[in-house]
Image (cartoon, rainbow, N blue to C red; front, side, top):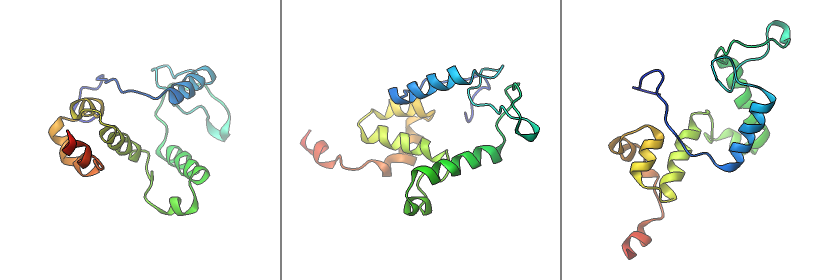
Length: 136
């Protein structure tokens, strides 16, 4: 996390389907010795080696992401910027929370922002609320 102590954490809601996937992953692939959930498990020549919890190399991470996009997105979506980088999912989550009506202070806490930064970056992503707000 930016601008935080190395051991700092924050709690973020996770939808039940993702919880089920993560539970399955932990059963199939126990965390590394440092507690990380996603660690390399292959060594030279592709053979399995127990991991010391080293970070996943960028080329491995990028290839997995490109493969997932190719599998799940249409050709037109693949040519678009949609989820081009894993980091784009963070922006999607924040935008969805704001548009679902989650209070800005709560979204800011989950995202690790102050409300000022959150609204400066994401205010343009909030849409379709004008009629509801006017009625209030």
